[in-house]
Every structure is written in C-alpha cells, then in structure tokens.
Length: 313
Image (tube, rainbow, N blue to C red; front, side):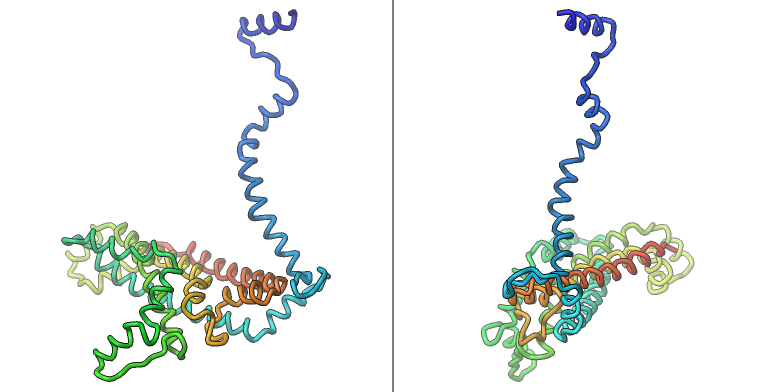
C-alpha cells in the first residue's frame, strides 16, 4: 500500500515511476531491439549458409565418399585444372559479352526512337516491356518450340524466304546452338536496356538541344556532343546490371540445350549445377562457386569504380 501511494504521489507530481532493471535496459536499447529480428533473419538465411559453404569447400563433402575429411585446397585445384570448368568460364564470358552488347545497341536504338511522343507510343512501350515479366524458363521453352527441328516454324519460314530448303539444327549444331541462346537472351533482356536508357534520355534538359539547334548543329552532332556524354552514366549502369545478371545464365540453357551437346553449352552456373547436383561432388561445386564469386566480385569492383568516375560532361 505504501509503495502504491508513493507511485501515486510521483504521478501527481509529474515524475515518471522508477523502472525495473530490465525495463531500463530495454529502454536504452530499444532501437537495437527493433532491428534484432531482421538481423537474426539475415544471419540465418545469408551469413550462416555462406560460412557453411566456405567450410564445405575445404572438406570432402561428397555423397559418394563417406566422411567429411579435411582436404585443404584440393577442391579448388580440381576446379582450376578441370578443362570443362575453364571452358564454361570462357563460354560464360563470351555469351554474356555478345548478348549484352547486342542488347545495349538495340536498347539504345529503341530508346532514341521512343523518347519523342507520337500516337500509340504508350501501347508500343507496353508491348516492348512484356518480355521482362516472363520467366526465363518460359522464354527458353517458347524459343525451343520455335527453333526445334522438325516441328518448329523457323526453318520453314527461312525456307520460304530464301527459296531453298533450310534444315538448321538450332539446338544441336555449332554455331547455331549459341546463336539460339543469344537470340532468346536478347529477346528477353533488350527491354531492360531500353527502360534504363529511356529514363536517362528523358533526364537530359531539352534546352541543350534547343541551343544546339540554334547554333546549327545537326542531329548526329547533337548525339555525340550532348546525348552521349549525358547518357554515359546511365549506359554504364545498364551495362553493369545486365552483365552481372548475364554471367549467371542458367535457365534458358537448362531448357533449350541442357548443357549439350556434350558440354558445349556449359556456362559457369550450369557447370556448378552439374557437378553439385548431378555428380554429387558438393565440395568441388562449392569451391567452384567461391571462385566464381571472386571472379564476379572483381568484375563488380571494376565496373563500380568506373561508374563512380563517370560524370555528365
């Protein structure tokens, strides 16, 4: 009763009641308690699997061999000296470089066309960005149906256009199997380049073009003197994002070629998938994933450093 009366007098006097030890600690660390669930979730879903994979890359974590003996760098050596791994990395760089370059050129041309208003512009833009919302698995299956011999219509259309029979094996013959993968990738991701570059074009002040027109500058000269310098940061941003996604190419290859014939369409991601989940050499696949992560981090570092140095003229 006396304690209750004391609290009542404190409230009446305007002084807050004295908190317990735990309540005082919670009050001091309230902001950390709010973010604690998110931090624990990140640790459980990101940091722990990452550290566990690092441990696995140094042990013999293989379903075909009992025990988890420490093997040091042997898993990394198997990947480095595996000719299929080297080929997959080379093919990844080659396919992603060509695909991103084509997507960039086509996206820039479409963005330059769509930057000005004209009747039906909104409808055309809506149609152009549809491929972005389609799953890569569906894209791969659709292009497989279009290109596959003998039921796909592509060879028939080419036969009618060229006036001679066309029997290209788009999924089995070189270089056409690489062409088919590039076509599928370009069809889906050119809209990504288009959207980013269009945003960059619309951000360029129109008065620059008006001043250039008064000075007698033609459209080609204005592109090189105004558009290209101001669009350079957005260009590099689009190339960076798209290249980082392209080097992870897996879905369309899994559906269209299955890595074949043989290992001719093994990208880095498909190689790691095959080693880990088909051959069940999980330690080797994990070591290869870490090497691929280091390679990707170096690419990111170079691109980001270049992006930070790029400023509109």
